[in-house]
Every structure is written in C-alpha cells, then in structure tokens.
Amino acid sequence: MVNMTFTSPAPFAVYVHWPFCLSKCPYCDFNSHVRHGGVDEARFVRAIEAEIAATAARVPGRTVSTIFFGGGTPSLMRPASVQAILDAIALHWSVASNVEVTLEANPTSVEATRFRGYRTAGVNRVSLGVQALDDAVLKELGRLHTAQEALDAVAVARANFERYSFDLIYARPRQTLESWRAELKRAIAEAAEHLSLYQLTIEPDTPFFGLYKAGKLAIPDDDLGRDLYDLTQATCADAGLPAYEVSNHARPGAECRHNLVYWRGHEYAGVGPGAHGRLDIDGERRATATEKRPETWLTRVEADGHGVITDDLLLRSERADEFLLMGLRLAEGITLARFEALAGHPLDPARIATLRQHGMIETTGAGRLRVTREGFPVLDAVVADLAA
Ligand SMILES: C[S@@+](CC[C@H](N)C(=O)[O-])C[C@H]1O[C@@H](n2cnc3c(N)ncnc32)[C@H](O)[C@@H]1O
Ligand code: SF4
Image: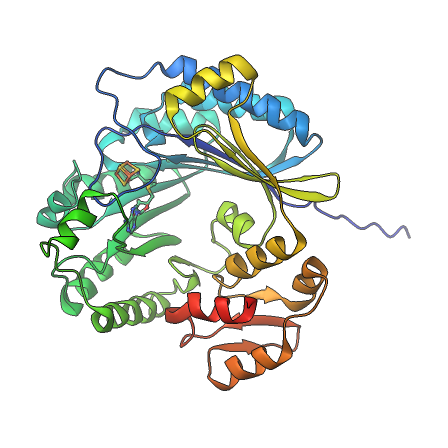
C-alpha cells in the first residue's frame, strides 16, 4: 500500500482596496473618498490588474487561498470589474479550488442583479455594512440607508450567497444595555454564520472627533463600554456565534479565512490605493504599502507599474511583535514555539507567570498561549507587557 500525504500550501491572501464611497461617514477614517464627478472605473481596474502583475512578479508561484475586496465601497464596482480583477489574479497565481472570495458591500449599493453578477464572477461571500438597526442612529452615523433597507440587503445577500456576514457598530451615543440587547438579538436572528461587532472608536481627524472634543457626542463611559462588550460576548456565545477574534463572531468553522491570514501572521498581497501587504521574499518578510491618494496611486501605477511607496524589511523582533499583536486578538491565541522561531528567543516565562496569576492569559498543554475573557478588554496592555 502506498502512503500518500497531501499537504495544502501555506495560506496566501490577496487584498484589493476600492477607495470610493457615495458619501463619507463621520466616524470613518478608512482610506475612502467621495468623487462627485464620477470615477473612471475601467482605468482604476486596469491599474489594479497591473499591480497584481507587479506583485506576482515579486512573489511568484503562490496558491491564492483567499481574496478580499475591501474599501471604501467595493459594491460600487461593476461585476465585470470584479471579474476582471479575479481573472488577473488567476492569470498570475494559482487559485485554490476552495478559494474564499469576499466582497464588502454597503446596503445602499445592493441590488439583486448586481449581487448575482458578483456571484457569477466568483465572489462566494459578502460582508455588509449594516452598522445599526435603528433609523435615527443610522442618520446620526451619516448612513444613507434605513434599517429596513439594510435588512432588505441582508435578504439579497442570503438569497445569493451561502456565506454572508454583516457589521454593526455598538457603544454608540446614548446606547443603553437594554437597547443594545434587543438590537443584537434582532441582528442574530438575521445572521447566518458570521457577525462583526465593532465598538465605536473616535478616530482623530473625523467629524465625530470634533464633536466629541466639543462635548457634543456623549459616548458610553469605560464602565458602560465594558458592560456592552460583556453583553455582546455572552449574547453571541449563547446564540452559537462565539467571538473568535476581538470583534468577530462565527459559528465554529465559519470564520473569515481571509482575516485569519492576517491574524495568524501568514503572507498576503495588498493591491489598490493604500493597501498593505506582507510578502516573504528570499526568506525574509517585507511590509509593503501603496500610495493612499487614489489619483496619485493611479498615475504612479500607470508610470511605474505599481503604487508601492513603502517596502520595509521587517527585523526579527518586529516580526515577532507583530505576530504577538495580531495572534493574541484571536481566541485560539498563538503557538509559543512559532513565537520563539520568529523572535529567536522564547517569551519571558516570568512575564507569562505574572499575567497568568492575574488571570489575563492562559497556556495550554499544546503549547499555546491565549488571552482570557478577563484579559480581552485590556488586550493592548497584555500585549505590551508580553512584548516588552
Ligand atoms: C471599511 S468599512 C467597509 C464597509 C462599507 N463601506 C460600509 O460602510 O458599509 C468596514 C467596517 O468598519 C467599521 N468601522 C468603520 N469606522 C469605524 C469606527 N470609527 N468605529 C467602529 N467601527 C468602524 C464599520 O462597521 C464598517 O462596516
Ligand atoms: S464606513 Fe464604509 S461607507 Fe462609510 S465612509 Fe467608511 S468605508 Fe465609506
């Protein structure tokens, strides 16, 4: 009898950034822009194709396991554009037969025919920005859709895709535990396998930041924020959607495989304006980033074939710190041996012991270290302590 071992190739993800939105939400600091005069979509798509070719020339021979169209609002793209980008990826790399292809969609730009087109193009998962199920709140968040329109978009997603997720923002102005409990339960009833639940963060240089500084945005204090977080964890876990990452909940096995590539420290390419990548070249890891401003990125790509403006070799210590920072966001935590292999030294046993005594982390017999329920609300401090 012949013994055969089938090993799957290391995960390799491709992130495609589409930087345009219909309007700018006042809380958002993502690389997203409004172009009232319209966008030359075909020209941007050609530039993304060129950047895929340039990236593949640097990291040839990979098998793509996941692709993510993020934004901005990628659902403003025509299905033919999505198809052209997926064709370019398949032209330059191999694509795994079970590839996960996610597209972020804003409820304002969801139509059944468009979604069917995405599915035909090869998209097999959508992530919808629902944000809230309350019309007054949606208005305050600067959203262009109502709660009903968001639910209608979820129904279109459900009709077209076996896998869909949607995002909600909580810890919003004036939110109470009771109102969030009711809203979350309504959301869970609409969810299938995955939900992303983000605590509102007040980002510098956003209109919300100005309102907050002026005392005009009463967001929950730390205690209420913590209670809202605990309620979120408990409610989702009870419904079979435990957190597998700080803000992401899924039925076991239905995690977003693309985001797991980031959090598990695997390799990924980033194309489009302001996209980040982590590429393994000649045994070393490089951190890449492209020009953020869409039109500047476009002219750079047209002149040079790519828009990369940062291409840094990561030191061993930087790579190990990043692995810790990303990996400890996951409920599964990290493998201690992998940290040691990356850093060239083990994590400090004295620091592990102290954090364990305080109930912030736990280690498992399988050589893993993970953050506990008590540790997650103070994750940044736990990571800083371990990495010091
Ligand atoms: C880049 S957006 C893309 C989704 C799509 N453009 C939309 O808004 O429907 C990804 C998600 O980040 C979350 N987000 C953006 N800014 C945030 C903030 N300041 N605080 C919390 N969550 C935020 C929102 O839930 C949003 O759906
Ligand atoms: S939250 Fe989404 S729709 Fe709003 S500005 Fe940011 S990327 Fe665009």
